[in-house]
Image (cartoon, rainbow, N blue to C red; front, side):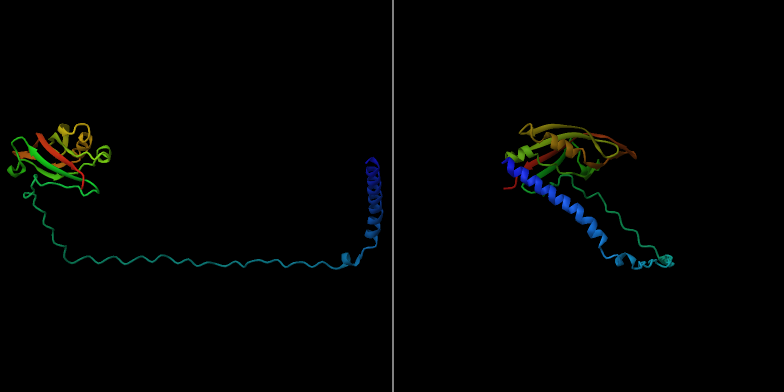
Length: 199
């Protein structure tokens, strides 16, 4: 094994020495006419300066003024609003009903008028368990027509619909009760939400 290594090393030394001797000879005998040819210079490519014309924005013509103003729209009368109408939420797999009552007073007496009523969101826990029921909340209609002091007073089954009903009642809007030209608060108003799943 050592003899083969020595023979390989000797041959490698001989080949390397031969290359060092042959390379200068090849350089000297090379064709030198290639270096004597004139070099060609590439032309410089330049883009001419051009002026870009910008278009000025033309001003649009002013719209013509109408000769006659449009007629005023008649305001809808709110006297025919019935607060006892049931409101049904059309959300899938559930229906909600709301009825409005007050202690001895109704909207037909002209005391106050409901303008906006928002249906509550069916609680997920009750919906997933197939629980139906109702919840009555009591609140005060303020001078501005909003609601405050909202408390659940009668809910069945308990622990399911109270929070959703209170949140919905917070978004109610009313036309406040007016006495002698001044709006006053109306306490003790109750609203009942009925939670029913669609069959």
